[in-house]
Image (cartoon, rainbow, N blue to C red):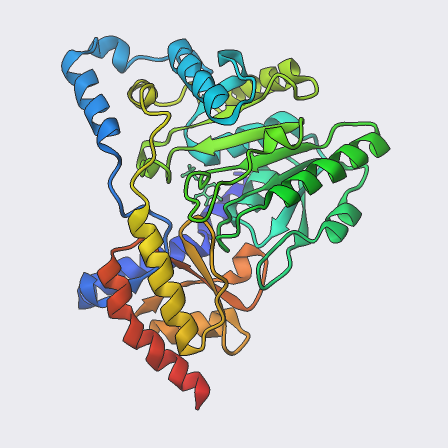
Length: 393
Ligand code: PLP
């Protein structure tokens, strides 16, 4: 037996652990009495365009082809439509041969990392980060190298970042808009990434790839997120429709290896090989076809924005230290005691479920997923107030 895999299976992520606790608690005291902010599961419906597209394919399509295998990298006409939309939306050269359809961002990341890394290589991530990064990087045989960002806004510490890069660095994995902080990268910082990575790639005589994990790209409330291939040529985009189209259970996303990436054709071949070696076969066929006409669409995120403003203002007024998130659907709140686990455990007594920050690679905070009904937030506010009163005593 693979002891490493057994250990992984026996220690589910903290997020999943709290989610399971919430299910038990909801059955005990009723769903409406639990303020569950644990999971980043979209609460708004997928756009009509997606549902109509699925219906029309089922009603009018060739059901054998519809449910059949596509080519491993994805159906050609789907990749063509996607490449055209990337060209159109970001003014970046893109062709169907640069795109590999995946089962969501988790698959995009595991495949990209497996394609790029060799044993002993290092991948830099910025803390706080999505906890599964550690699992994905180690699964690719590489080592994770963590660089802290700068609170309270969780901006990139470019001096620490530059110092962390070594001969062993093959890739840098970033995620903006960010889970768990909601931070969005500025155009200036996007430029800084390009400058540093270009300089360091030259210094070590090998390309350092930037992997841009973008499940929250469209969830930006104040402006737009910079498209990283425009700022650094050796960028590989790992995308998912889980959040932007509210389709997390459908498992659909893609990898974009722009043609101007160093050794692009070899990297793309390695992506295909990595997908093959991990048995992905192809991304769900029905979803590939359904999204063919939806690449310009986004779910209506206005309710997330309302939740963001309501929650941020209310918690700030109560005395919590919260950074206003520019994107995604998370609030990152400082623990009034400085201890994230103590804070989240104490909150549980008020039926508030948040995720302690330690597994995101930083101590002293809690993550609140506000992709919930507005009423849940409104109902939870007296509980948050009472919790804060305890700390003020
Ligand atoms: N990356 C980040 C930053 C995430 O927050 C998530 C999911 O929450 C993923 C990747 C995985 O997304 P998917 O459901 O598309 O696999």
